[in-house]
Image (cartoon, rainbow, N blue to C red; front, side, top):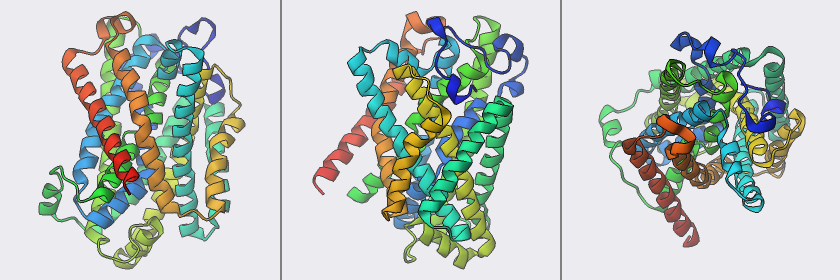
Length: 426
């Protein structure tokens, strides 16, 4: 993965080999090629997921479990499609979209993508600040500044030590996140029958639809889709035709499948923990209330693990979000953005919200709804580009997978239209 200052494509739009020396030298075994999807998967276990899934479980029990499972299956297919486009073309999704839009349309498209990036960073910084408040009692605004500074340090570590070291650090944080959020299930296991019932698609009023949209936005992350095409491009370069490309695509399938399996387990665990241990308790539809209830019901060790997982989630995901924001800006506006400037662009709104006293949990949930509205703008171009024979050649999307991707896009747009109607009618 290239550094933020290097995501702008080189003159002439040619591919740039990643740190491993490109596909020719790196494509020797599948395990060696794993990594980019685990970086992207961090976006799927950010604090916005915590807020959306804990709120859903605390309010409705197992009712919306099916939303998480369906969204995670969608995410596997979508993230592989993004990575495939990046490998075959040697360009990121924002670059490919930018090449096909007139200047005015390109700037408008960038504006909505930037709004999605800002909503993402709000969720990540607010969640990290809330974790610092739970662990050490720091004021939320100060905690947000600390999260911003640490995330900048993580990105500078990538700049100094390279992509592999950064990926290892992200995977370590992902392990902390997984343990922190899943530990409580060992103490309060869920009801098996209720879990099976929760897999049946249904809603319970307009508020459950709002939460479903929030969960979808938190699981199928627009900025992760933009970023994944750049992550594989920056690691491997443009995949050569023949056996090298086939190996890279096979490794990417494993990479995406394993990474999102971990993310899916974490998301399901959050909802199950809230449904089995927090439903009906006062104040458990907020993260701080859920933390207090977990500590009281399951013990301080589980409460601390939950807060540590939340902190690791905020730190890791805000670093990935900053990379995604730079990828979007570089691809659509052709701008080289200094690391500190890029970090401040989306950090400031989060700090302002914390400083004025906005409710942290509801801020996280609403930010995920914003992400949900951003999904069609990234998903529709991705589906179209993957089917383009001139762009993808023999690796273009097959008719069955294309039909499935079209169905996913239609379902997402339909859910957002329903949400708009519900919000308009109160």
